[in-house]
Length: 195
Image (tube, rainbow, N blue to C red; front, side, top):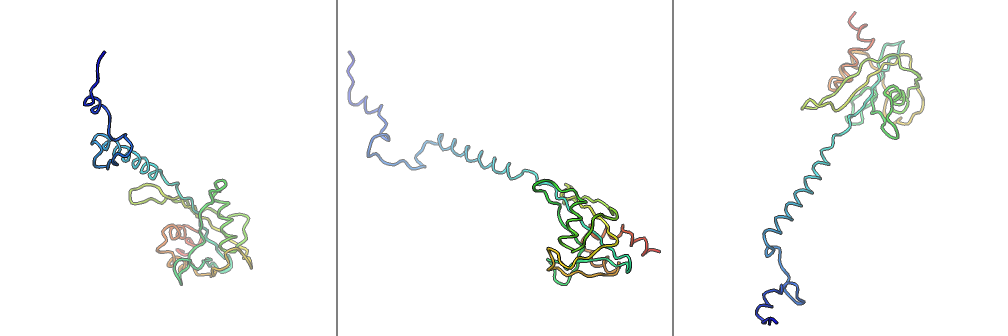
C-alpha cells in the first residue's frame, strides 16, 4: 500500500478552488485563455460588421409633371427643405405591406402631396437609375406627365403651397434636382419650347 505525504497532496490541489482564496485578476489568467477570449470577441465583432454590410434595398421613387393644358404651365410645390424653393411633386413608392407599382404610387402622390385628382397618367416621361460614387445603383426614378388635372380643395399634405409656373421657370427651379430637371427636358412642353 502506498503512502501519500502532505507535500505531494499539496501540489495536486489547486488553491484557486479553495474557499477564501484570492480572486484571480485578468492579468493573472494564463495567456492561452486570454487569447481564446480575444478571438471570440473578434469573431462576434466581425459578425456584427457582416450584418451591418447587408445591402440596402434600392429606393423606388416617382415624380409627376402636372401640366395645365390651357396655360401650358407646370404645377410645383413649396419645398419642405428649402424655404422659398419649389419642386415637382415626388415621393417614394410604398414598400409595406406590399411593394407599390410606380404608376399607382404616382397617382397616390398626386392626391396626397399635390392635391390633384387623377385616375390615369398621360404618359411616362422616363425611368432613370441613380448611382452612388462607386457606381452602385441606389435608386430608380419613374417620372410621369399628367395633362388636364383636377385640383382638389383639400388634400392630406395641404400645408405645402401649390404654384403654376412657366416651363422655363420650372427648368430653372429644378437645376439642382437632376431627375426632375431631366424629366422636364423630355416632357411635351420641351418640344413646344424648342419650336
